Length: 89
Image 1 (cartoon, rainbow, N blue to C red):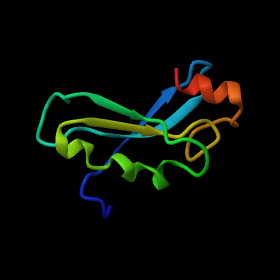
Image 2 (image 1 turned 135 degrees about the vertical axis):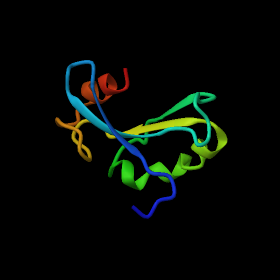
Image 3 (image 1 turned 180 degrees about the horizontal axis):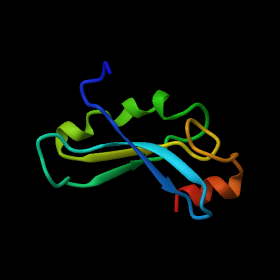
């Protein structure tokens, strides 16, 4: 509620059907994004601690999607090396 750009909650499925949760930030003042940046924030914690690294992208015409791998944040499942790779496919 305190952020100037509000994320849209999104859900999608990994290659094996595991439900994943993320935030989508559409570009500001632009219908079509210049590009969509998919942010793989890496190991540990969840998207709330990492999304600021690309927070200015929507003000520059880019859409921005960041999500939690399985077992983190609101995403289902348990992290495994194979599963985390499938989350990115």
